[in-house]
Length: 229
Image 1 (tube, rainbow, N blue to C red):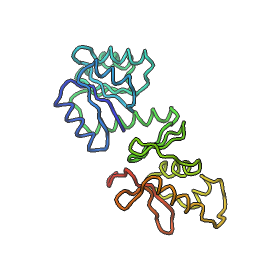
Image 2: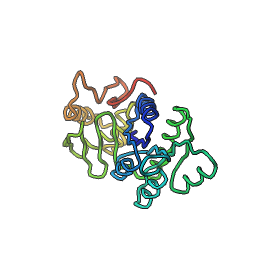
Image 3: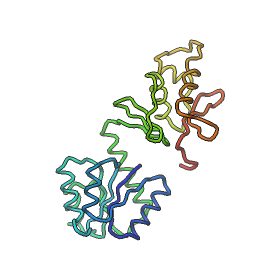
Image 4: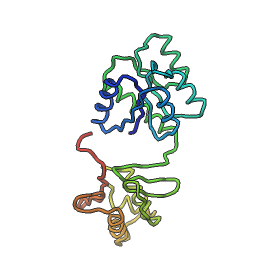
C-alpha cells in the first residue's frame, strides 16, 4: 500500500511513517497543504492521510479542491479538531474517514486498510503488484523494477494467475483450467515448460526467487512476501 501523508508536525509525521513502514506501507510525506495538494493531484496513492490545520493552505480547502477536480483517492482526516461540527464539516467536504489526535497507530493502519478495501471493491483493478513485479492489466504489460519484460499472451496469463494468488499454492490443474481453459489433465508438459520460460524471463536465480515449486502440489509466487502476516 502506498499512502500520502500531509502533516506539518515533523515528529508526528516521522512516527507515522516509521510505524506504517514497519507494516509494509510506503509513506510519501508532504509538510504543508500546497505540496500535499500537488502530490495528491499527481495520483499514484491508494489513500491519503490529511491534517486539517496546515500552514499556508488548510486541509479542508485542499480536500474540497481535490474532489472538485475529480480525485477519488480515499482520504482519512487525522486532526486535533475532533468536535462534532468539525467531523461533519470534514466528512461533507469529501473525507472518507475521520480520526482524532491523539491516536493509536494500529487503529490508523486498520482504518487505512478498510478504506483501501472499500475503494478496490468498487473500482476495477487495473494493476497487480508483488515485490518488484507489476502487471498492467489494461495494456497487458509486465515490469520488473520498472523495466518492461516481454511476455507471450499465455505467459502473461500464467503470471497473472500466480500473482493474484501470491503466497498460496496454485495447482497444475488450476493453471490448466484458468490459463489454458483445459478442464482435464492431458498429461502434457505445457505448464512446466511455460513456468520454466517465465522464470527465465523474470530473471529468477538462487538469490532472487519468484516462482517456487511445491513438490506434489503446484507452484506459489513468493516475490515480495513478508515473513509475518
